[in-house]
Image (cartoon, rainbow, N blue to C red; front, side, top):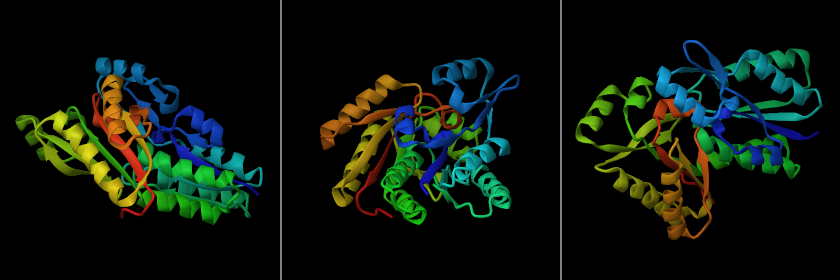
Length: 285
């Protein structure tokens, strides 16, 4: 019996890695007034063009049918399944997965399914999925794979800065007062995800200094806890992300991958945002 991994589209794991590690994925949805799309089937550049024309859409969790089909195809083979999804504070995906698990167990009494709340999104979720998938490929048990993913979550951090606080305010992801004050005084918040929610780590006067603050915080963490892997995230601003990756490489002398943030998270944070996701070899939390 093998262990397989199921995640959702907000992990933003590059397709090459998904295929190499055999990671299964279920997609969240983007809903404009006249049309809906699966996030996994929508190109980022197309999304932001449509959003500029039609305004900020809404998003929805994966359908029960999609979740059921993804789980069923694994247990039908007699394999165990570890599901790792975005924060339960940010989406109903985790709750739906638990409901679908009960449905699967009614039909497949001996199925082995565990569901883990990553308490984050993007590549902070993605790294937990990747290390779990690597452990599964090594033949580790479901319990071992789950513990490895949970341990990675404790050793990871997601730091990011928005280009404009309006998206966070409209999406309800940060308090309205903080948004208005930030825009009025041109204060840039350095944001992170703690206990499954977006929170303000600190506030900086300029975007340039805010980016350097991201790097300094990462360097501070890895000097204490040693570096595992790092990725630079961006929302429709790849040239700026390349520059940030170069700054990081000069500091820590390792290659830095660059990863787009897709529509579901992108519409809440807005174009021009950048961030760093990394995990350490020792527990930070």
